[in-house]
Length: 109
Image (cartoon, rainbow, N blue to C red; front, side, top):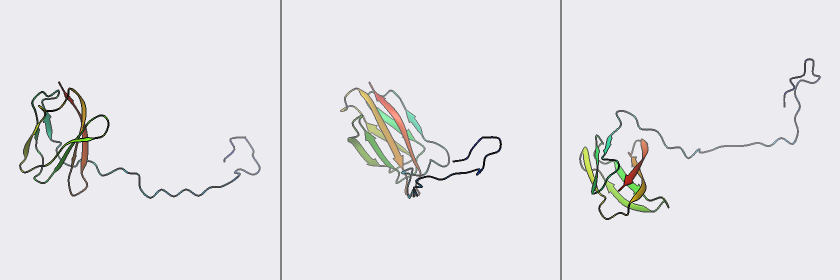
């Protein structure tokens, strides 16, 4: 603790010190380069993801965190079939082997 008093004596004080060590924040990289296009959003039958690298992992989770669609991109453009899903909000996560990762909220009508 540091005092903001005009003439403190001593200037700092310590009490019950606790050492904290943070090993991992849980934050995985960010998306580098051009972000992909994801449309239409809201979607009805299919969701199109354009501008991703071959091998990009694609995962769609419902609001409870359950995986409802899991795929790996085989081209720069991938279509996800959304017709079997209930209307609502979903979280689309794209990740690459280099640590790039991004999440986008997707709405199914």
